[in-house]
Image 1 (spheres, one colour):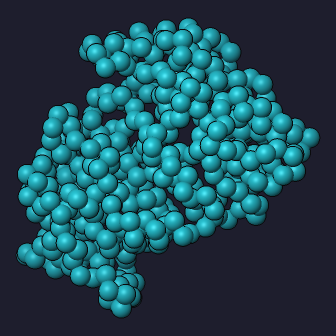
Image 2 (spheres, helix red, strand yellow):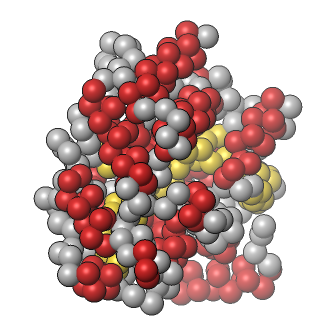
Image 3 (cartoon, rainbow, N blue to C red):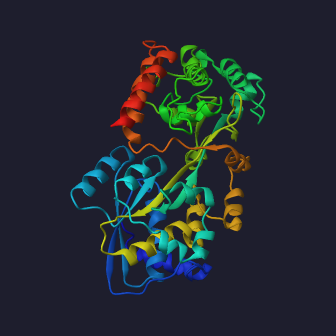
Length: 419
């Protein structure tokens, strides 16, 4: 989707007035003959396409001769389509990758190594949040530049807490505190659920870390069946078994975030990307750090911009990649649209984001960065995730114990890693 000519003229006029059309230090404009590049993305559609168009308008003004053509696919279809296109020799010039799938593409030679370009531009490297930049380095080479990052925190409905006489979550909360509050806040007569967090692998590796358990040890040993991991999985399942958290049948096709937005869920563990949608809520809500058991642990998600190793438009692709990742123009537009957080070190940009409400406690987002965890960098992440999700579904259904599920998970992971 591209902005119409009239929309683009309006955007350019606006950006010129507020002074963000000058190329940033470290993000050089590229003047060249007419070049069109394709950018394939999942995170922009459907809600942020106009935001992306605004970024493209600034970029194309700064880089005469380069046209960015956007292509999108829903997240559920995106990676299947991307794999098909790469295998068929029709890869987009530039495309979006999340951290969870990055290693799969980097290890298979699908991504352009931009290490030399990044090292030649220290200002560019310094403009990017180090943890996010590091996430897209594989075997010592830089194969992607982060465009955004986000994390997961505990959202809570203050009105429901007040009505039930329950104290708001604090940074000192533990799993026990969360379960106790979930029980108190559940009100079947009013259709209110106490809490919700997905019982999936993506949620599990973080929850396991909150109990001091790793999926894979430093020496490569698969340790997912440790007692601490079993306890973590049981903690995730207990709210469903005890009726504090809805099952898939209870949801009846309604999303858990929709249930929270409707005011029918007291607590939900989800990402800060929900801020724009939840800002429409007709009740007071806020966020808190996730409770841990033996320690704190929070997800760190980042979406990167990667260049296809097969593109013949490397200079133009690099210009777009570095602009989308590190330019203050793209960062300011992203913050203005409340589209996750730009992965930049410019504190003034982040301060602007901090001034937005709701929620009031946005500082929690940055406090959570002190306890970040990422999944093991499996080269076949999607396969392992799918296999474990099936096992976890059986635990939720009562067909398998948490201990037996993780014993099977260990065998599954070892089998996939040995292939």
